[in-house]
Image (cartoon, rainbow, N blue to C red; front, side, top):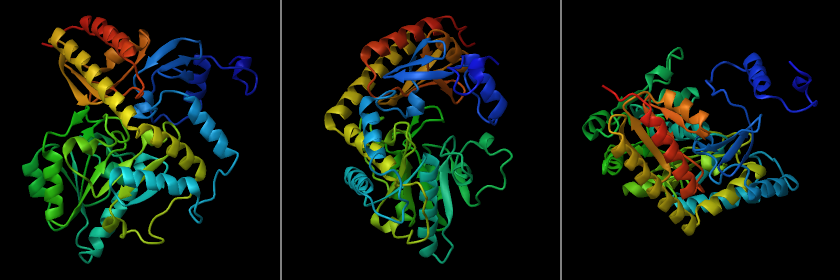
Length: 412
């Protein structure tokens, strides 16, 4: 390694960064051969100064793009005031963010943590305790969907409906049933008096950007509540503006008993939330659940600033308009390349292009052209750009997509 590899002696090259990571990090993540060192808006740059347009945005996280000035200003201002006090005390940013999110969502109570998986853990514990208290411990089962994704902790992965992610981690959390996403008959059969909650995503992100079918979530909520179970929505990826509304459940004419948020809430700063009704929240009394860093003033201040901006009516309308434009462009690609593209789908700025060929090689070819996207469910290209993406930037991507996909050998 050159002198640049010694701390404090200068910037590292891409090769040096990758070498250090490969030498010292767990090999549990498959990374693209790209070392990013700077970002602004939709653009990011690697260690050699090459520029890319980022249509992943930290996996639906960087709502205002990379390094927004207001976020840096808020972090600095709060860091000079009060960084951390723990949940043993109240603090003003915590109070204001809880008020904002509960009023916006129509739910009553909030709990803050550091990641979407932790928010889902809180929801799981709440639902289990809620069910246990009302049944003498007999109501504990959880119904989730096949192809779902809820996180990587033991609880969250236990309700994730992708069995390949379970390998080697058994025994998982007991009492989990998986049903096909969108199949009401199977859901109806699965929910009985032993179920404490039905746990679903409005749009399955890791499952291939698959929106819930019309009427499915509303009926699922009715089934759950009729049997005495809670209806839980994982909006870690869809929540806070991603679909052109404050929360994705608005598109489906339904309201959850518990909802989880993350990603855009901190836009890169580790913040997540579990929101719930008063009745559901009573299950977690003092001492039943907590976290040292959740609700810290620094995290709450930046999340409050971000959420206030995202929930602005004009901003949400802009996201919805841009999402419709993007989807129409993708549908145009599907029509122009029927041998390679099966369909375009999604809502707002959570969009997918389902291919008839493997998506991984297409991701690599787009990266070589200067565009960052990712593959999910094997054959789906996922697009979750900053909510501030422009029509011009979308046009550039779609031109590159058209050229790249035209080079692929059609299926069959």
